[in-house]
Image (tube, rainbow, N blue to C red):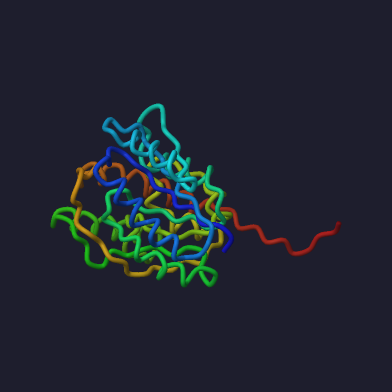
Length: 237
């Protein structure tokens, strides 16, 4: 572990950014590794970008990207992955529902595993979101031959060299465990805490996720079936 890059997509989270930075730096400082916090603003319409700029001016470990137009969470993550300097990339949401205190527990497994995916075993969301998520995970697992309980959990630890090889399209951030496996990654799922949202509003609803998810799962299933696995038997120099 040489350097950790925290990649955090942000869209209209002005009420959460400063508290997230406070909690995250408290944990990151205890890890005793160089780190950066890469905040990716997805063309927020509130005061998020202004807060991000203030943090970047005051703290050298904070970097940011700001989109010209709203591109979605997949695009924000992909841009963050490509601009991250660390050999380990950790993602989480900016809404404070992920708990930074879980990060050291996930990192304990890095090395033996190339990706550690958080699992919100006790979700603090509405009943409809819980039901929608359970149905979505069931369908994704059945159609992509996966076993992940919670692909939607944003708290993830990933090996950067593998992650940067993945070309992510809109919506495919929810399939990162599967896409990492296609790159040869060893994937582990670990239960993490989940907190109720205090500021801001959710950016998704079950109908929107269901419609988009259907297209996405078809695309990923095609990728799995068509993925090339070439093993060189012998060669000469």
